Image (cartoon, rainbow, N blue to C red; front, side, top):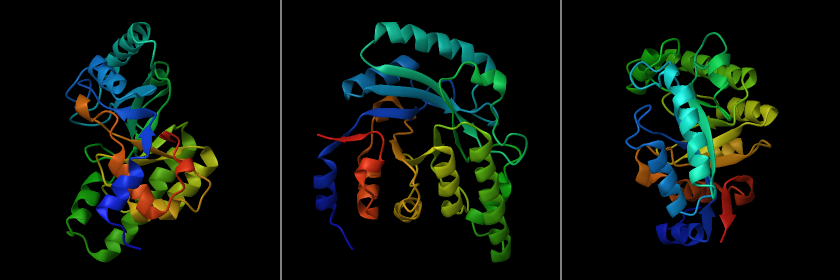
Length: 254
């Protein structure tokens, strides 16, 4: 069924975002400070915000492990300055094909309120070069099918072996079996993300994942402060996919 832009916008305008748990700062490759993100979140009426900069294993813009206690202290300071909003520290860990399948360790977790994970280029031990080439159709199709299996296995192990709040932008930057990822999230109680910076979950991915008893969350994935709290495009995708909005944990009817 085709929907007009005006129909989608009209429906989406009846809802608002309540919290945004996936935002970035200058501690990775965002453009604003933690407090900048907090101020925008407050201006948009959000009740909760998490800072979730990129995991330390990213070769170009991962956080420094030495920054985690600094970030923790800043979050705690801002809680007393802005008591009207719930503030949390997270990390968007990078999915790997080895170890515990993320680039965050037990020592790092001491500073975090919760943890996200998602697949990215720019890390070692993640089939990144192969996926990049496959995306550009530089691999034969049979290689792509093998990557689908490897990518999915890597993500599923990451979900089962770690306590994740959100699995971020599933389907981005490679071939992934959303069925298998959604089933793992159902088993582990991990939220599946509808991301505003990346087009995933896309409409088809939402339809597939909705067959499982899994909750969804819309995230701005803001890399500049003014994008904190964006949700409209993600909610539009959910509408087109026919998702019951009650399954989206951070959306409420106005």
